[in-house]
Length: 80
Image 1 (tube, helix red, strand yellow):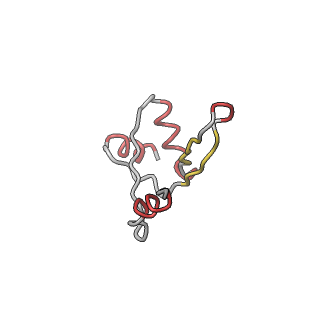
Image 2 (cartoon, rainbow, N blue to C red):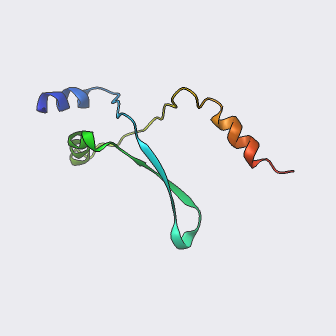
């Protein structure tokens, strides 16, 4: 397992698998915040990144069938 972690940490891109996105409120501040839950199957990797103090960037790839998501959102928020 250690060799695998070393190999992954030396690379630049890590496929984290499918994630879940949830919405929560900001309480008294109003508004919403969206949380991205990482898969627990890779906790060993998240723990190692946290222990090393590594900063990461997350990119989201939309699966096929949601290409019109931005257009649909714009249509539903348009007011007359």
